[in-house]
Length: 152
Image (cartoon, rainbow, N blue to C red; front, side):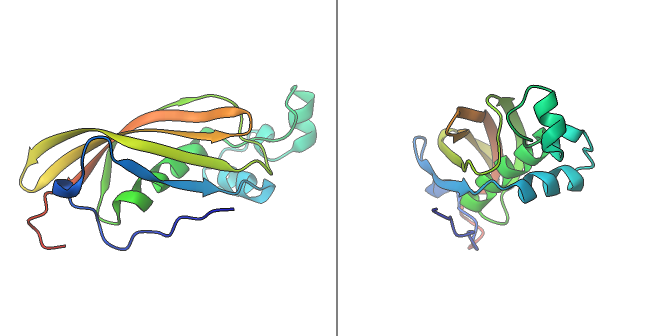
């Protein structure tokens, strides 16, 4: 299993180039992670915590809910960009389910840069989170980053 260390400093907008790869992130998916995510997001649908119920609904196992997926998309982006980066827009599309014991691997790249004002500039990232079944989630995000003049 690979892990990505969390960045402690924020990337500067001026240092980012369209085409840059976002640091990959692998999340080990466990039953506990799926159930905890459902509880934390107050999603009590049984397919997210009851394997037998999920099987009765035609699923091979319980599976991750969309709010947990959203959270991991944001973690992927902010682990790369740093603690002062702000996710301004997140647009995702769900694909295959995310089951326990099948790691979720995030990859992405910078697809756009837009200058802003007041030291706030924007970066667009296109990304996906995949497992052994295919793409679990794909999407785009816009992050606000520093312009490089702040000295961070």
